[in-house]
Length: 334
Length: 124
Image 1 (cartoon, rainbow over the protein chains, first blue to last red):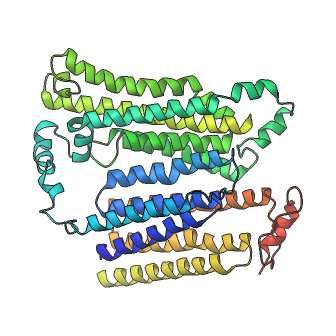
Image 2: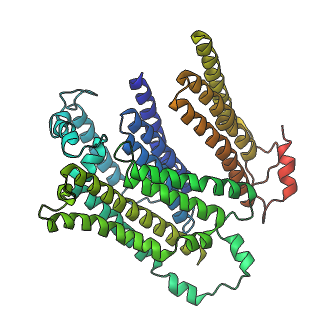
């Protein structure tokens, strides 16, 4: 039954992907990308990868759709036809497809216990997590502690991406503002913004839902050791709550609630917190990112370390996503 | 008792499936944006409500049933709101809600008025 459902979802995935490639309307492409992310999230869930499914649904279907729409508001709705190098790209894609297809012949059967991925380090992680880390969610143990270096790298990738986007988007903004001051009346300016302040129903419902999203985000953040969740998912949820607030109440009020300087502090602070926890391990006489020495008991130290680094991840992801969102929205108004 | 609950649950699930199917057909076959939206909103109100109630009966009195009830409440609040936001965005973009038009027509200039919106509601 699961296999049938999986095949059904993968078929839909291929159809959606073809739709994304074929459409010239970029709005349609963005919406299809959201559907694509949701489908792949369900697929991950069928494969029992609840953590990844949660991330994909929150980031892929939620935040990136909003960011794409923000980017589209700055450019045109239609894709420009590129006719050069079409045959070359077709050849590259076709050969890559053939290579991947050839590689799948050597793939082990779905769920085969003898597959290399189940023979390498995975058994060791499954066996040693209760002993060394003492938390039920092995994914969090692997992500936070065993492979802490990789996650630190991911956090810096997110951080760097945020800085890059902020540089690109704020490059011309100051000049454009100074050159062409906004002569419209304040009321008019509000209506032209992205806020839905005039619409009672979305506003009331948005206000009703935002606190629950924040509560759920806190749950996902601090429950990541026991169930699916963690910093990445929680960061995306925090950002989603504030983006929803910005959509119903307007940019200004969101920035009043959580100013830009706070967002930058979150971005930098999260990465610093993660790195700092790693350095604390060295200072206390062990290796970088070894949390065992953070507390008197090694397992308690691992707990503390994982909670702190997950907090760092959540802070950086929240700050980066919201900074990028505000940068897009500010460009739109300027 | 067990079999009665099972029966009711399957009836609800099938009815929900039928509503989703009707919503899908309507979203493809209706003549303009507003009527298509009207059809599609059947999916996430009636369809989702029936399917979730059916699944709740399958789950029995447990934590899962409470979670499903909360999801149902969330859907019943948010999906009509999303429909409202979509319709109002379409109206602001200048799509006229005249019933019977074969295609989504953009208004010649500026925004469609409130009267159009109420007329569109009474369409076939």
